[in-house]
Length: 209
Length: 65
Image 1 (cartoon, rainbow over the protein chains, first blue to last red):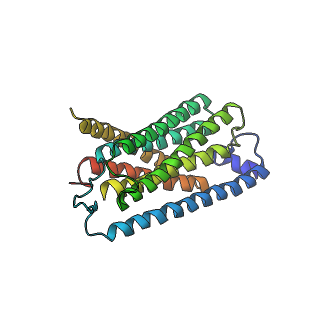
Image 2: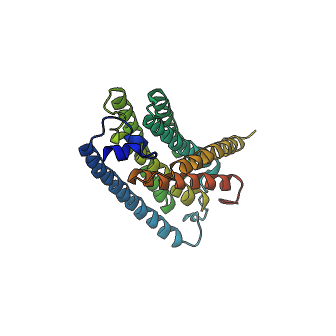
Image 3: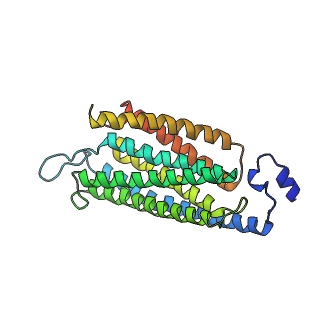
């Protein structure tokens, strides 16, 4: 069985000597767990997104007009485009980090991982800058409430992701992961890609729609 | 040179680089069929879609007119 797996040209991950079938069964269970976690997070974001869509469709004008009679401004699209690319770029660097690990290129893995952490932190900095400059407030309007709730929840996920990646880097440095046993890195990569993809939806909803 | 011009310029370069890179990675991973590979392919595809959205926004096809 092991010979069959090792001889497959697609299964790069199983080319090492320490193939452990008990581990791989456990890995599949853990993988199912992280995928279910991501699905539950999709449901969480979906609920807030549908609430935003409902609020938006219930008023004749968007951005809404305040009781004072003036229309709220739109968000800064140009800055959001730049900040979005910072986050999407971090997704690409994380993918490279994972590929480097699979190809046993440890120095490249750490370089790409650090780049991912820097870009993720950069995105958070950009979001903090936007929060400090945007002219609406959380309590001032439904638009502000939806914006700060959804982007804040996403920002919290990014913050957790950055911390997660830092811990993974330290674990990798300490030798916790091997050439064939690296589920934590896979989970971290999936989580980080997920955070990127959620931003695609938020970017469209708040800045382009 | 305004801040908006710089932001859009950097976003344009970034969107092209990240979009092409993501698409190439997606193509390279296409033959892998484990569960994590399938999820990664889905997420990479959506990320490439995000880059397309950014490009459309930069050129004024989407977003405020």
